[in-house]
Length: 79
Image (cartoon, rainbow, N blue to C red; front, top):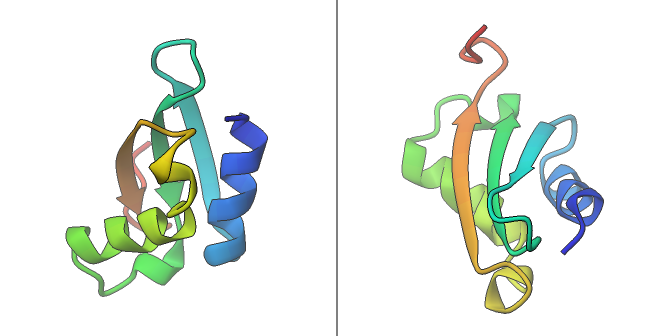
C-alpha cells in the first residue's frame, strides 16, 4: 500500500495530525507510523492505537500486514 494513501486515511480520521511512515520491509505491507495529534490528549495508549487502527480497518485486513505505532500529542513529541 502506498505511503500517501496511509497518511491520507489517518489524517482524514485525525484532522491536523502529522504522520511519518517508514516501510519496514520494502514491500509496502509492514509499516512503522509516528502519529502526532492533539486528538490523543487525555487518551490512554490503547485508546490512541485504536483510533489509528480504526482509520485503517479495511487496509489491515489485507494490504497492510503489520503496523507499529508511536502516538504523541504535540506537547509530548520528542525532539
